[in-house]
Length: 124
Image (cartoon, rainbow, N blue to C red; front, side):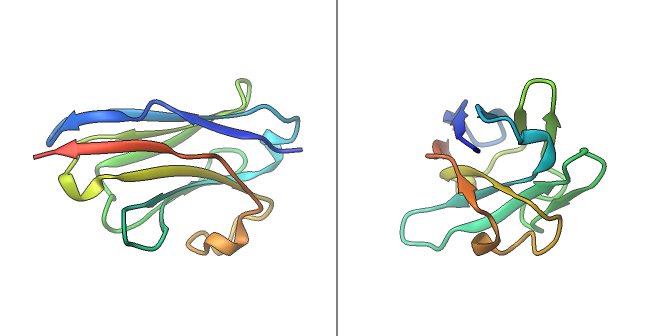
């Protein structure tokens, strides 16, 4: 069973940094690929970053490449998203999600488990 819970969201000024975390309270975290998505008001949920089960490979949306870093600690059942050089357009609810296989990263329907989301607001 996978149970995901995000934390670490908040309000930050443009140019600042924030790290959000996602803990899996289940027992299969180390078997799953993990992704971060975000959804702004009035917009569709979009892929932000993904990481393979062993942390060897990472994937990013073009809009965050070079600014965001995804990482994981399998000993702590936790995946992180470090966000630097934040922009107002990064404002959204950020969700972590788990999937069994490491492909089709951008497709939200390929992820079987989702957290409840954490709000990130970037002020200009």
